[in-house]
Image (cartoon, rainbow, N blue to C red; front, side, top):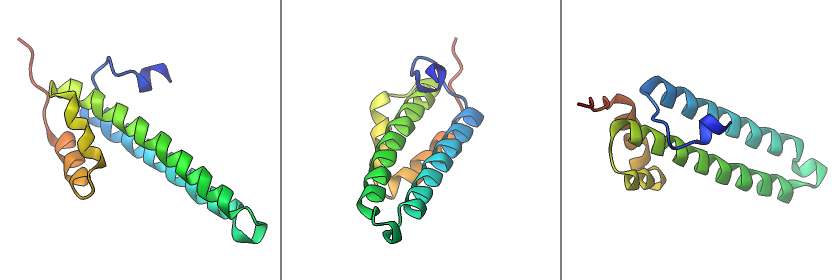
Length: 106
């Protein structure tokens, strides 16, 4: 877990793509099952919403760390990572991060 959340190491294209997909799959699965298991039939619907908010916050943090690692690989400024939270721009930003080739060090 330490290597996944560390921002010291760069993250290449396949690693960034796989890590992003796994993070989104796990968070989507947790959100789905929290609504399924804590449905209105069981009278725990507010708890399901709370669980989804917590899962979303943790997912946003992990995606931010993954984006910072990818930006480190590209040798771009880390402040550009806030673009993942701009609606509409975030999908284009991820596409750019996936197709951009890292700079070659001298």
